[in-house]
Image (cartoon, rainbow, N blue to C red; front, side):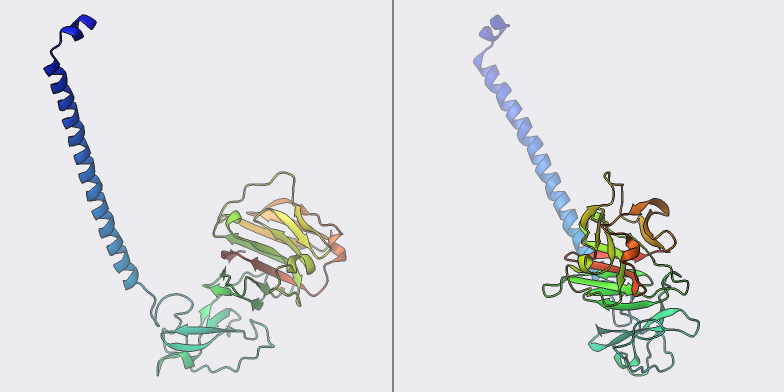
Length: 305
């Protein structure tokens, strides 16, 4: 090898190096051309997506809960009392749509089903608001109250979007005629990405306080699988070993009045008893209602059967 290298003319070495460099430069040029082509395709796709999104922006007559003015119906001008709860009663939320501002009301239809309605005052002349059924599960007879930046979106979806001035909120339901305390939800995102608490709280619980879960009611936090209660329970682990909880899986609590325990379920499977510092029977009273509290983070969940 050394003899071959020694007797190899210098010109051949230089020619070989030049050929290799030319090959590398040619390959680099091909890669740069490919990258430039992909970038152009990416920009074109972004423009198409932007145009498609703009074309599908909800209008005043658009999709979703806020675009409710679709079909002319009978005139409905309700006087909303803020002292009344939802359901058989009414509750109000301000809606701004297409330059019109009005109060969105939650009412009960003649069939007994809950519905959301935008009064005709927010609609163009000659168009009345249309009631959109809420279809709540049987174990909650109605929505009692909503606090903070919590919104009802669609038939069963609940959304919390905190603001700088109001980071906490909640929603509380009425109990069904059988009086069984139960709540079941499915998180849209991974539990670790949002901070919510499901449980049972008295009707006067301050859902705007960040410490409500330590002051009123009994709660389970999916984020860390921990327990909170008015007896001083704070961040207590539900179990020594955490169970797998994915986005979309159902998580439910039921208060067994006979056994005086709170049972935790995942996708209908019994996971165990929630053990607080004090016996649960000493805390639960007739004013407790199924409740969901939110704190600090954006959260979207669905009320499940």
